Length: 424
Image (cartoon, rainbow, N blue to C red; front, side, top):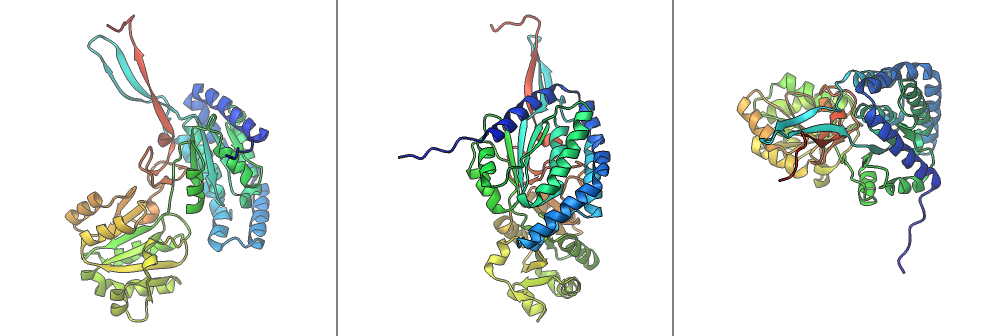
């Protein structure tokens, strides 16, 4: 006998209905109202700063006692720097151009019928994420800027923190005239609330999971709602034969060490065979100073005895999110491109070179959402791309790829204006 799924809980159904109603109201509001709501959110966070830090301290203590992994604890922690980041991203989102109501294309038919394609909100967006409180503010900001209602389901380890953030943002939104349920936070613990969220296909138009590969796969396979996925950040940097040593070391270290636990941190370093003898010793010394374990191919080990742990085959496809870096010597630009396209995740991959023809070959050949030339992989994000807050970095191809800002959370509709036009 086929099994029947348990009914969706009344609380989750209410969230869905409220979000749909809010989305319809948001779609009719002018961009100035949404911008005003976002502009008021930094002050709203300031008003609850002490409460936020107390809630976050309680979340971190409980997560540490429960044995949460160190990289996830780092993502959970709200420091002064993180708090300022939350404020800045909200302010940046408020100042961005309105992505709704843009005429994407238009023309007049020979009959005189005027046809336009106009950007509109997607509707209701569900965000399922782990550990990172900044996703709460970023996701709400991006969704609201694009005229969407949002349902947030953060990890239970961050519930106290997220409740304070969501309440502050909702207060600022309603004070600016936005509907009460434009931002909603799922507070029910356990897998049942996630299961119910995945079944709200009558109310949610798009799901965006943010977290580990297991979470993303579970969401994508467990719902009929379209899903925008952000899989692993297996990011590479290729140092070409002509890579200047100072730039090569600076970009490699920054890409890896600025924050090791994030998705655009460097995980694999490829060094051209012609520059390996010149660059590997200084790279090894720089990473040793910063406590990074280097796992190298046999050619790395031969050139710098004792500096590398032997790399296993699995090292070329693992996302560490830790102070570990896999290093391989490759034979030229095409070999680097082939390695990246074979072992990478399509997130962010870069090259260091002074030759324009090599750079162009790399840009054309690497199949990733972001391709960097002489720039740190850590720059592949919303703020450094001028997008303000983003809801994530998509490794999908449809409908958005790379940093997902407000414009990526719109769709469009066709508008035709006539003067009594009939189909002939």
